[in-house]
Length: 430
Image (tube, rainbow, N blue to C red; front, side):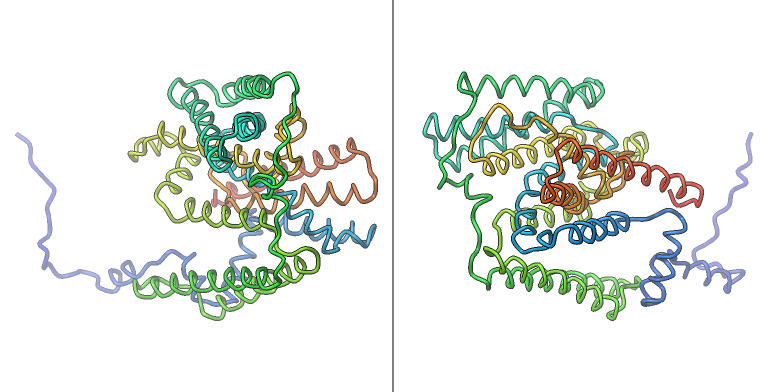
């Protein structure tokens, strides 16, 4: 016979120590209290993050400033409207692919096939629309869906069969490269319609000066309203929210950047369509990662696969879907590359493209160890890479030197990430 020594107090039982109970009930995450302390609270939190190794996007922003100062001092044309506009258009293809890679990196995995998948995408567009006369919009859809299917195949072998992602995607790199060469045939090059949809992805500009300023207004107003209503919802729920002064300051900073960019675009040819599409993709994917259950599951998997499985997350489905997303964005990037050269050829998706895509994601702030990063990192990272390329190009510096400098920047970034993680673990923040 056993005796149950547990007892349950009635619901109306008096509280023995009401002061302690009140203190326990009002305990709040200290990170949320920062929002109520205003600018001084954020300054203190910033200092704590720096001391704990949580650097965020600070290194890449400082790096961009240094790059601009150095190259502008070397050549006054670097910060010209024409050069900056060209940078903003050129970086879109690599940036689109980097967005997809970020999804994979958040899992702590890698995808080496994106370069070849992008090449296949361009070949599919050229073969269907030029050789077979298919409607170009339909050919674009087929190319993007095909890229997603290729990525899903990689994800299946990784998630379901258990093969390492590195080996699976390396095999994909070789297989899809051969498939692309087979599609292009003996000539190896298929020229696209110079007035077609794909060609205009990188050649169309909104020449009306109002277009750039309208986009700036929409971006600033969208940010302010989103943050404002989020703050109001927090207040209604009794959760500490961002002070209005802080929100206004952030909006002002964004407005300065947005209208300066609009002014710059209008000094050359106008607002590039490619840059607009890139911004739309960044906003949409950032929303998916930070505001949806699907995005939270990706971050959870990057933190701990076993914990995610025990929490009821379908690990296999999430992994396959992430690789499908990477393949889809690789295909989109392939469309922009085909647009840039107005053709699909045997060199598409080869060379340093894969390394630049991965470097853009990592340099922008996405961790190679998984669980940390945002799709906006693709914008920052690709800006660094393309700015270096254009800056060195203005000085007539050879391509091998560009490779060495980009490799050095990537190594420094990875080292910063490693040291940052160790510092965070020591400070108990990892």
